[in-house]
Length: 184
Image 1 (cartoon, rainbow, N blue to C red):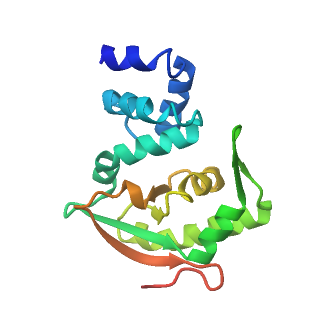
Image 2: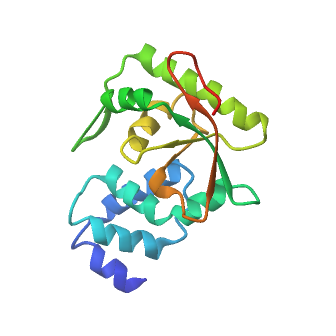
Image 3: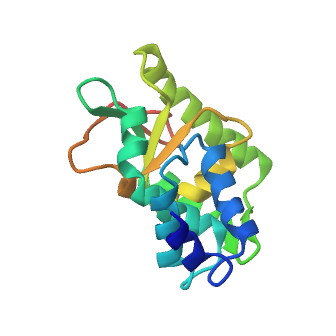
């Protein structure tokens, strides 16, 4: 898509900034084959923010169908665990997002405990031959990814904005701090 590229690079974004967004997507196993869609999305949002993390989030929203199709079963059901709102609030409070990126302010023990709770909850999914998927709010997704990347590299963290309308969601539990995962 030469026209899209010409509109975006170098006027709106530098090539290195585009590459940074693509790397963020690839780190989470999001295919970048739909480059025209990705570049159009960057063209839409780059004038508003230069933050590669949020730009990648906007791209993920546009690639919702691709993300869902990779994680759903044959009946188009996305099997997930969700976070208890109190735990989601703690994750949000424990992450600082500024113009230099995302920084974890939680103690290493709190990060480990959060990852252990999630790992325990997603075992229900993996025992039933589903992928390890956590469904969270769009504001929480990048911070939770930052927190869990080292301990749970194969965890798929999906925001509500990335679930297509025709995808059915089946929750297999709620990750809670007090007593571990709770069945629905």
